[in-house]
Length: 171
Image (cartoon, rainbow, N blue to C red; front, side, top):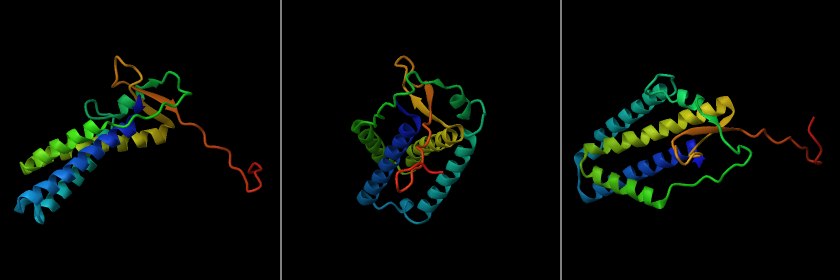
């Protein structure tokens, strides 16, 4: 079981790291004019535009693109008083993303596909973190082995009581 936001952030980080390594390798091996100057600026502008539109669509309640309905449909996590350790993605997953991004970077424009995937995972993490903060719940994935994609939630623990310098309770 793992936190939904952490899983999405780690997947996005692995994919975007793979893209950075892939582009660096591609530039180092061959001198491609499309990877310099205007091509990078246009790709960056399109990536930011995609990210903004994706966040707006994913944070809606639209049937096929909105994530909010799925978050609200999550049930309480069994054993919510015990917080499990979050398992990070394995090294194999990061290596797979790096290899995929290196291979696609040699194709030039095909780097847009892993870039869109990485930005989509980043969008899901942002939308989920915003939803968690607004609703005071933490989303979890994988509590049910038969349905690992199913989401559940646990309440956020209340903040500790503030103490003074003399270790007395704050007023």
